[in-house]
Length: 203
Image (tube, rainbow, N blue to C red):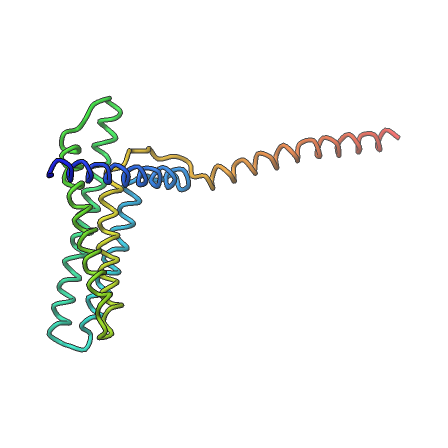
């Protein structure tokens, strides 16, 4: 039975990571930035949602408000710490790929991310599910906490994705192509104007 569950989870995780890889590739192609940049953006969004949820849930109670502010600080610190770790792991992964080898620290960290991603996602989903049954007006604030947890979980999935190096963004390449077309269009026009002027002078 446990073997069946393990295989089912492995298949689900593989399917999720396939989608995540596609998303990271699209982000890299569009913006030219890396997976750490995307993951860190998610880790910036997560504590904003979580903190808003915590404070909104207890704004009318001084005691719980203090606790909510404390929890908000913890979540912000978690995000900051993870953002720094993401940057370091990406540098190490890039160096390992350039040397055609594996960095065991990075691989071990990815194993941890394979646990933390689902953990935050499950926590967020559980909070969201339980809040569906509430009728005290606090559901919206708790949905923010749930959403923040889900976004935080997504950041760990992103960091497990394949590494794509920095590149020119699609927008920048498009603008350069347009500039090149414009230059190619101007050149014949200028030459034609010069030839017309020369002919006029001769006459």
